[in-house]
Image (cartoon, rainbow, N blue to C red; front, top):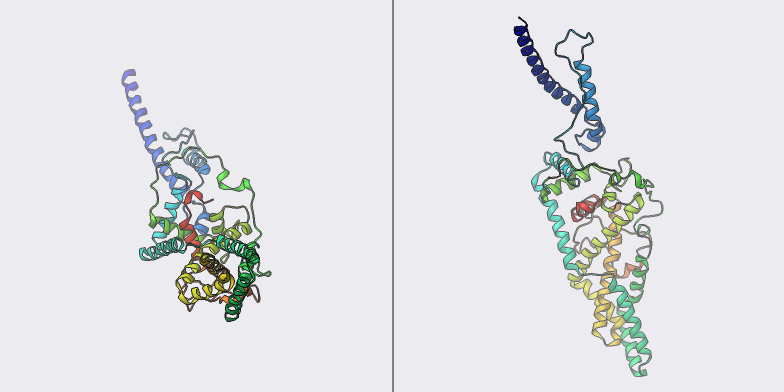
Length: 408
């Protein structure tokens, strides 16, 4: 009887143990479902991201398992047990793959809310900008180099004979009378503008700026993280990058769309990575000035009328030197100065929430060659282009240009 009883109870204990394992597996699934039903509400409401805190999962699993499985009346439940240890595996953090997991999660959400054709149009804008920058070939060094060469030519003129000086003076005065413009003053004016604070060029004194900032310790990049749980994440293709770019523009704040987060200019922070809103905005405005100057310089170079005006003005300044190389250098410098002046007006328009075309036309161009030295008077801005891009859309292009690993 003892042998039979021992065999029977051994079988019963094995069955009980097997049933406990099954119940523990079921209870773990129920507990996980309950935990994942408690996704971080702030992340969902603000950023449409379904995520849980890794630190809370194990704690909640243990707490939930014990509260459900330990019977208050001990001895009446043959299948009771308690959770002693919880080990997590097979999970993915949003920071895995240098943020690729977050990119895929955000892109997956946007894919349900954005047409493929729209994404392709956005990517074509990025490629169009890349072509403009490659073709423009402008450099702000052209202005300084032209002024330097002009100074050298003026010093050389002083050493030449009187007849040549008189010829130079007659040519310069006749052309200057036709243009009614001192081109050298244009170059010197733009050169002085470049030395000023960039925000003072594009914002009025009464325009409010965010003063939000945070310390180095608050940055996500300063956390001590264990090894990645899922490092083998596929690199994003162009479509995923566009979707993620649109996600960032939709759920993060920028200068024209503040959302009251830790920083008011969050997209600018992603592009620059500095600690304060103002510093990030300064850097982004500089990047936009560079983009707009390249586009405007390309337009001026291909416009025969405006290029001719710049050539006439260059001749009035350097024609007396009889040096065609110097005249051409001055012409390029004038075109650069003109493009930069128009770009300042463009950024003023963008920061007011209006639109500027990627590549301008005769109708959308604003600044005349005579108005370059007057861009600080009455604070003018460029014409609003109905078919152009907003400040937010230009930020999107900057996001596509910038590599993810360089972002803060």
